[in-house]
Structures are given as C-alpha cells and as structure tokens.
Image (cartoon, rainbow, N blue to C red; front, top):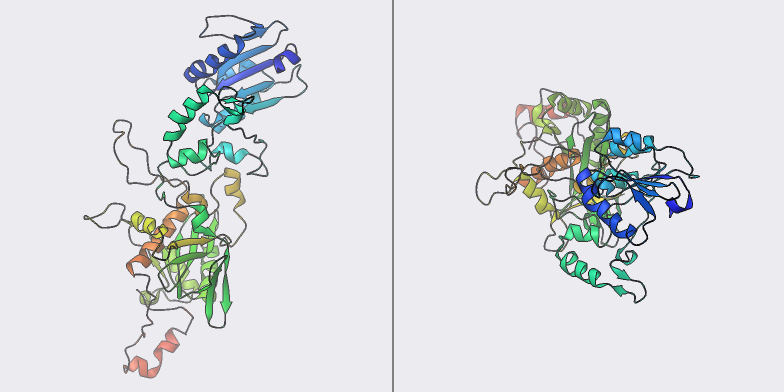
Length: 455
C-alpha cells in the first residue's frame, strides 16, 4: 500500500540472516505479489535485488548480517521480519541508515513472537520502558486471514491444521508466549517452579508491641521468629543483599532488598547495620570472595575483628552444584525445594513486592537488566549443552544476571542446614567463670538486639 501511495518510495524488507530471508520472507512475497504483479524485477527468483513498481517505488529485500549492504539500501521505510533474531546493534544500525525521501515520514516496522521478558525487543517498548521509542501492536491468530475466516468467524482449514498439529504440542512456556502472547520466562530455567503470581506478594512488615509481623494481602498475619540476611558483592555488575523473615514453620519472606551497581562497601555496610539494629538480623551470609568486605560489615556493627566467634556477617560456604551422593540435594535443589509449597499450600520462599529499599537502579534500567532478584529468577538459566553433545544435561547456571540468585542461594542453604531454627543465645563466658562473674561480656560486647554467637 505504501509503495502504491507514494511513487518512488524505497522500502526495505529485512531479516537477520540471508538464508532465512530467502526461505521465508521472499517466499511469502512471491505468494502475495503473484495475485496482482505490479512490479518488475532483476536477477533470478532467489536473488532479486528489488521488486520495482511501475510508479518507481521499490521494495528491497536485505539481510542484516551484511552491514555494508544496509548502508547502501537508503530506504525511508523499513520492515524487519522476526526482529527477535537480530542483535540490538543491528537494529540501531538500521535506525541510523534510514533516509528521507518522497514519503512524508520515516518508519521502522518489525514483527516478533513473544520471547523472554528481558529480551531487548520487549525492553525497548514504551509500555515497558517509559524512555523507549518502540510502540507495541498486538496481533492474534484471528488477525491472520490465512488461518482465520473473518466472514464465518472460524479457523480456516490451514488454521485448524496449525492449531491441531503445532499449538497443541507446545511446552508450557511456549504456550504462554505463542498462544497467550506473554513475554515470560526463559527456556531452561534453573528454578522452573518459580511463578511471579505465587511467589511475589503484596504485603508489608509491621512492628507491633510483641515483635515484627508480616501481613500479606488475603492471608492471616504471621509473627516473625527471626531474621537473617545474605549478600553478593558487586560493582559494575550489581551487588545484592536481602533480609529474610522466618516464621514458625520454617517459611521465609524477603522483606528487605538492596540491588545496585557502583555502590562502595561503606554504603552496603551502612544499610546492613541499619537493618541489623532495626530488625535484629542474626546473620548475614556473605560471598566469601571478599573477606575485607565481611570484616567491614562486622566493624560497622561494632564487632572487633579478633572476635570472629561473635561475627554477624560470616562467609558463605561453597555452593554445591552437584550432589556428592545419591539422594543429596544440591544448593540449587534446596532453593528449588523452597519454591515448592509445604503441607499448608504456601510456598516456603516468597518475596514482598515492595521489598526493594531504593528506587530501581537507573543504570540497570538503561542497560535493560534486572533491577531486583525476582526479575533475575525468571531469566536464570542453565548453560546450553555443547553443540557436539546436545543430549548432555547441564548442571551449571549461566553466569549472567545471577547476583540476587547467588545471594539467595547463600542465605537459604545456610538456613536450610539449620532446619530454619533460630540461633540460641550463648554466653560469651561460661556461667560461674571469672569472666561471667566480673561482667566482662557487658564490657567487651554491649547488648545489641540480634547479636548472637557464631553458628
């Protein structure tokens, strides 16, 4: 239509790779244009340089894996088929390559099937990112005349075949994407049993006379037995820190979260110390790669370095991604178990929707990266198997957007090994000893809510 309305307009139709351009896009164009043939063309049927209309308009097929070809197209209207196959750099190159011409406006159109939530395509859309410049128009099978007969309001024979032979055999994630139109979790998820609608809840942490309580919308309030935290260090990549509330049945709720890039250790230590003083956090289970950061945490909480037995911040144990013996749960398995429901039908791990203690990191927004742990979990996947061994089952998560997930793994597995029992207060000096009689504990370790002996 554009080619007929504006004589002399140059329109580019593109796909990421030349082979798919020829097999898919050009094959479809032959079927559509065969009905009215208003064009001339040069070259063989498989290598046309352009579809040229009698009014001088041109439709130019091109592949985005040839940057030099892109620059020479000089089109003012672009259409990219299956834009999700492209790298974002290819897309922005097209934006730079667009030229003014006879058409009163320049436009870049594209189509894509829904994919992972953090796909660059989804994150460029204005309904997701207020700074985005891409507008989303949703279409359904009823919009495709090849599959849907609008006169009879039913599927065509081809549509019946498509729905019966393809859509009925989709995996649950593919069904959510291709049938329901949702941009949802990645394939190969580490914790495939996580679900935002189940594990991310509306509620708040409330201080009452008899202690801290968690109130979740639609549920009875429950009293917090104790709190623990976890930390994964970061700088260019985000650091992540959580505080978890534990109830009397061993279920945990993330009630505080910090997730930010470019924050010095002083900032993290200050936030951890404030939460420890307010809530009585008994332990912070920390990434063991930075002992100096752990010492800084304890120093900020008033604990001397030489008194490691009283440390609130302690190094995490090595994460066991492979079971040492049959029947043993790996640390990944322990968190997966936590996302399952217990005998009461409530998941053992949940997150308050308002847990984040600051505005989402603008740098992460700019990079279209997760800004909190729950956004990570839905994109936390296993490494793909080697091309030479596609049947090989990977047990190692991909090292990408895993900072909150790692922190959660540190803390939850530590609490799991304790059977989620609160730490018992232990005296610094045995009862009746000289130190106990002289009150040395009061001098060396003034009482601070939540400070307990090493466990």
